[in-house]
Length: 156
Image (cartoon, rainbow, N blue to C red; front, side):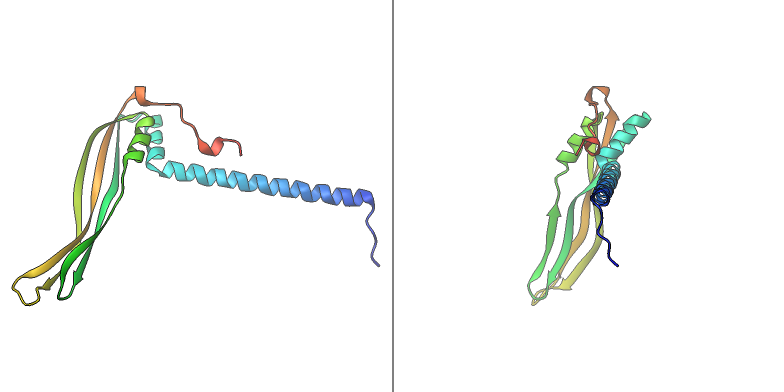
């Protein structure tokens, strides 16, 4: 009914399982490399690299540097909740891809307001919701271009 496997069959089975495990691990590593590569080229640094490779003369990048949420507290007043981000690391990464920062400008994009009448006084409390967007313009600069190091190509 049940046959015992010969030592050769056991060794073949173990080798087959080991080969399947190595192949599965190689597939996982390749999929991870593809995800990392895709995420890089979707980033500002990746977009800058692609623009440099295309031979573009200018590159523009924008980022939300501050978002502001409107808060109205009845009978107390109004305030805002602010979240900020620092784009310096991104700007440095773009410059290393062969770009020189030419100009930066900031725009507040209003997304709404909340208002309430003041309690026991005339007038209104107003809180504004929105975000501050930074626009950066770069020009091509061959002396800033460094040989790219693709982290997804580094052996695991």
